[in-house]
Length: 312
Image (cartoon, rainbow, N blue to C red; front, side):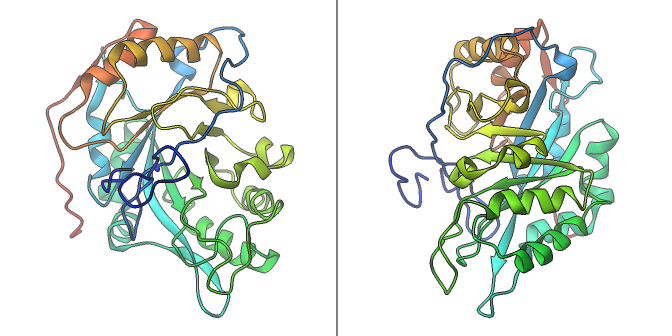
């Protein structure tokens, strides 16, 4: 994510920059256009059931840093979920599709006791992020056989991570002998994965998420809206399955805007909110405090930092 934007630094994606950097090539999210800006109003959420999800670009930042942000009791972590951004879906010249971990991801996943278990011991769920890899294969163009091998690769990490997140970018559909995206593969992949694991499954609402069937969505823990620093719901997802606020920590919204939009999300009974690209420094405490203040809470940092030491 450090090449500045889920599109700015590499290419300008149709209008807004959202570059979700990953494994082989740092990239950040790309702006999406939310379907329903208002969102349904129901009972207010509570801090206890309101997700605070953060994407950590592990090429730049040790994920353990996410565990050093605490609520006012000095014990409860501010973040509820950490997404390790990201492993890749990769196709080869023979049409085989598998998971690929770049050296940084591989080192983290190979030593969960050092890089993952400490977060889990604090009550933080650690999610394996997944992203395209410029090979022509992606979540939305897989055959049944490719879905089988790819999801088998993922569930091999069931005893390490708490779930799997999918961001449909950088696949480069229709190249290198792979077909263009279709309207069923993404759903079929999620349904197949749900049949193999009881871990959390989530999506970044960008790319081909518009093709997801109601059955596939029923298997998701959440969808995170894809507009960098934007706010909005997608009517395909129930409010209780959606993270309508996506804050870019590289260049965050004002504290007033974060507080206001978190309050909107709370009052709409949203699943939670999401932060992108946790930095090592500055700590961005004011951004997290602004979100916590919507619940009458505050956030502090322990002062401890972890360098990106993946030598194991």
